[in-house]
Image (cartoon, rainbow, N blue to C red; front, side, top):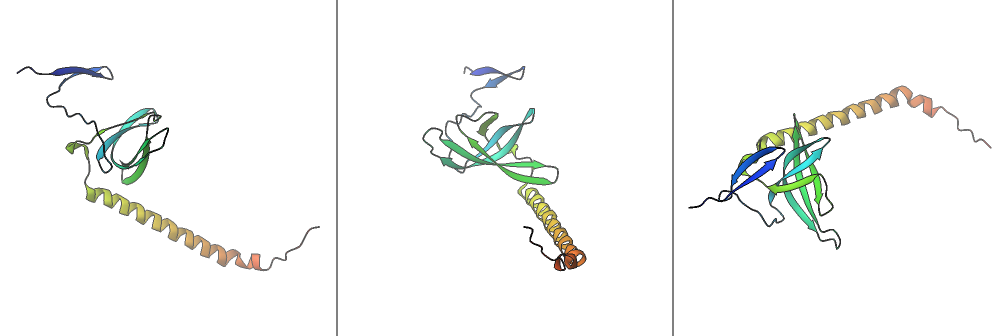
Length: 148
């Protein structure tokens, strides 16, 4: 049996790919899990994503993608609007081994962010109360003078 192999080059590195083992995706559907390669400053980063919609604009039909960006103890959802004018971004199918962390770990990161924001709100409420206590009388006793 003859093998169908192709040599591809990525960033100066040549690789031989056996096309019998390759999977070519011609179609994407809303709800499909994918990977996005997005330019971040001077480099590219790969993220997992999901196609969440298709906007059938007359001049630029657009695939709407939500992708998960994780770093350190944070998780954030970003959006990519992918069409024929999109630069510095690519999409491809998601492989089983492409998800580096678990759902539980991602949810913990979101919970951590929520807790951090709740603490920021409490801190602002305390500052507001302190302001009203320390400076409230100053603003109450001011006489408003109309300047002509």
